[in-house]
Length: 293
Image (tube, rainbow, N blue to C red; front, side, top):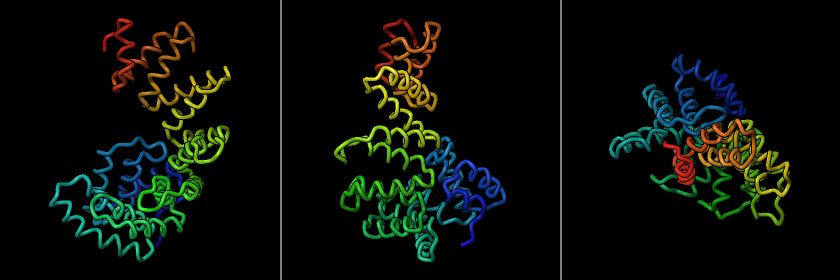
């Protein structure tokens, strides 16, 4: 199958560049580009801000243009009758495309079979594996997640790590995060904090705010005083990415002496943001200091 410029960039994991081209292609009426834009918006790939509402709009537009991939992506947001109408219309076409070698369709078929609507573990893993063998990074992440969680396959953290590392070669921020997270876990005899930090920094660079949050917690738990300052800076980055717990942590570290005296207002700016985002401890701090939200 011939790929457009936008799809080619997407498959290489060059998400930010891909989105620019995909938007041009979508404006020209390309439903496949609409599907990929929807995927980026739904998952928050690259530096695209996750927005389910916008994702659904693109999937709807692509479905109206005849895309079965977009149709299947709409299933969770429809009522019962409409859902089954879309499934009956689109899923056979997705399977046909998967059989013909379309890796995007392979991944969607795998996801669909492992979902809550029509569960078939054997078929789901089969299609994810086919797409993963074709080095589609999204399928590699999906397959790695299945092995890590023991969902549809026996739990196998070694295989999960292999999948995540392969997907990370395509700069998938979520796979880079998983590699870092697993290196910090107890699945091996010893944690590798240094390598974990390297992977989490890559994930952050590629747009994952949660990676900054985890990296901050790694530094905060260190006995090295210099690492405490690193933790503060990474909490700030995660806070700027909109992570509520990081907003609270950054604010509290300001109050504990990080930053300068003039930054007290900055501390309460972050704590107030955390409270508005549902962090209960932040509300208690504001109340104690006479702040109203």
